[in-house]
Image 1 (cartoon, rainbow, N blue to C red):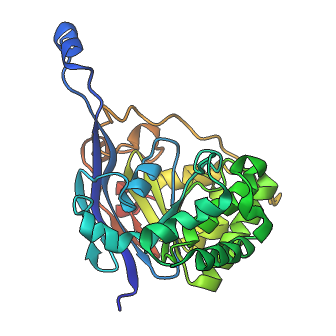
Image 2: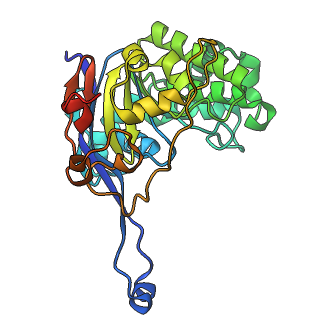
Length: 330
């Protein structure tokens, strides 16, 4: 059995954002394409949490949807436990779908308001046939509610009767109901209060240790990622610019973009570290800058950065796409 559970190779997703045909003819405009994910590759080993971080619009959620088969990739490959994922083959995907699940960002939008909690959690069991019989399903629902910190009496209620944190616990119970090995967490705590975030994150860590789960964790919050991730990938304008061990990324970031993100984090420990505001904005993804797309915001920019596209170079605990790192300028 391979230690790698999920392998992503050269994943790319392009969207056609052109105006309708008649508008293009009248306004004499060409078709426009947005490359939301640009040649992304990474591996996730069994039992670990791999986090993807980046500013809004960096492609995090698009990658999450492609990994679980909700969105078709324009190019590239995704292998789950050595098996290629083909969203065009319903037979192949049916065999894999019960082994991975997704926890969505909003606990208010991801639960059917017309269904009772018991039906919400039981649906994956019925869809994948993991539990047979009403009595067995009801018993399993009660067990899952208890596992996520709720009670069996909550099974008969509707989602609107719960707080945001409780709804996210229900969403986690639903994700666990098909006995998955792998869970994609798309900013699962960003819609919650800070105190509730900590409870949900601790619950997810406990469940990972108890059930041997593997997570792909999507977030823009570096403090959350620091608490959760074994390894981290940093996205910028759809491309993976740095991957590293979780602790090492915070202790010794290599890519200038990673450094900029970390320097902008408030110094809650009062160590006297200088706080730096993030400079500039993400360029228009429809017409990105030539060469390294980060060069308009980079303090280490050189002529080469403006014309050539960097390739990954090894770092002590991962790799980075940066000419300044390659040339030893940082």
